[in-house]
Image 1: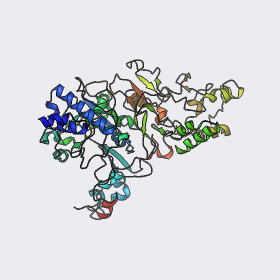
Image 2: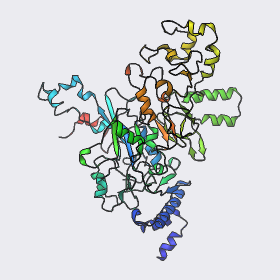
Image 3: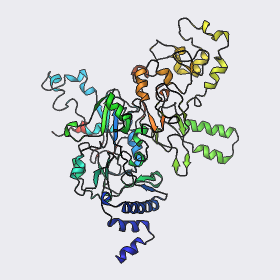
Image 4: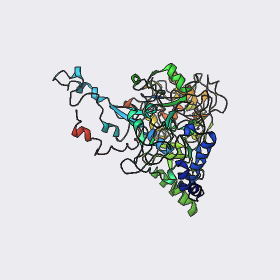
Length: 311
Length: 261
């Protein structure tokens, strides 16, 4: 422990904090003092690394709050501004090499033309296409992986609809059930969060998630100093290290302070809505009361707090 | 964006500004918030290292607000909005952005000239093409809104042309278009009032302070349906797509090579 004392006294912020972090427990089991200590340690480390004053917040869940989200699928135009705003806010890796560019929101593109009258009869067997919906080789309604990488001049395209997906913040999250080290858990106000320091990078949660919401830092994250967002939360957007899983947490560093998540603010068509499910006057509660609402893959009984709706 | 910067540069040069100001002008970045041409913002630092907006390098769209209430004013009265505490609803005034607005009420449509009094308005309510107007407002030449069933003075005030008009013919500020639009689009206004339709930024609590985006910040009032497209929002350039999965050459890969069954 003499060496430990020497290391923590070191002038190098990274070396000093790294040593202490090895002896850090699971964030959920730490005492408030230990949590504060861990956050101060990280602030010191990040401030040195990124050359500016970085704050690591630890605001806890407020009683009487259950965060909820609603998205109007009729309005979405697939412009991907939410995806980029999320990257700006949440300090994701933004390198050029494979695996270095991480985006939490994925905008799915569905082709309307698949079910167009001129394609309906292309089925197999011949002439019965309209009954089987396309044919075995080009089945109608099949969405290929590559279609999500659409890049037209302008959106929305004529024959497409869009459906953004990200973490659904399930009430019964499969990722939490499988985590062998219990580093991912549901916070009292709803979001499912990750203590990145306790994550071992086994990727069990990534396979368990039915919504493809989780991403892993396979490489050292690429985060330029000038682009780094210095306002962070311990369970939210603080810079991650190599080998840990990350995902959407509804901008905990903003929402715990009362501000809308970044994707809600940026959506140019106002398709994204966020609010307190326990407040009957909130936007999300009014949508649930008034609109046609569905949950994605509701049959899996994951009970997402992310709702899709249309007018 | 670059064109605008170029023009400002020339302007600065002509005015004989000193070289330091010239350098500042050169770096000026203008981004648009919701729809191009409706709400442009100039990037600047609110605090050192804390910008008012972050913009997309690809499309020039605002991606992130440092302060959501920057440059806003209280929204003003709105029927059935009694539950919102004063000062909690703010808007960014558009009137200062509309360059010709101050002229509208004084230069031509001051409401005193005999040719502009209501009795001499065209009986068929078809706007006459006046070259000055067409040059100033290209949208107005082929008014799409209403598909020919409405005309200028259904929305603009007869004698105060820098104002809009409400149900009783009283003038409404151009910064409160919801009072006008809600006359016909009542269902949309109800949803907008409750935060279901349209966009708000700021605090998410139902009692929190929010910046509301008014109708015309997202929709072009003269061509709401975007011509034959018949959609409420104009097409915009998308941001760049995500990284391709390892091994996939391009987005068309599966279409060309097929998928294994």
